[in-house]
Image (cartoon, rainbow, N blue to C red):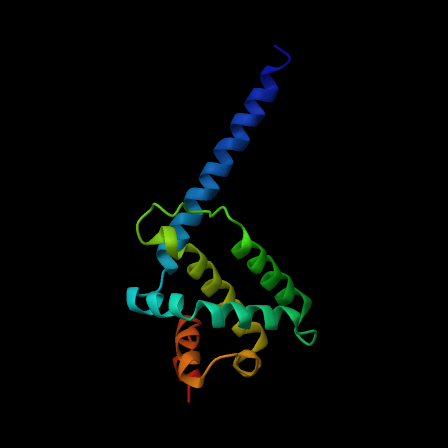
Length: 140
């Protein structure tokens, strides 16, 4: 009888984690970019990763932004995904979707000029991340 509370606690934690995972999957489905834009973002992934690393290393940005970017880079380096790769569309796109959400938050706090200054690719290449971040007018 004394161990029953422990099992109840473990089952409760497992259910809470499952509910949180399902909620995350639903959020990723809702914020998923259009199919063509997602393909374009995956093609530009090396430039986006360099952008994220450069922004995370920029000491002029607020600490909260750098922490988010550091956590994102850590998540991207993990071999285990939140959504397994065998799930169609979202399986391979979860990294791009999460990176897009963080990039949107960074652009809102740091500004387009700061993000553009750290972009390692061409101006044409910047168009896709700018659209992903919800800034269609950011590209000249």
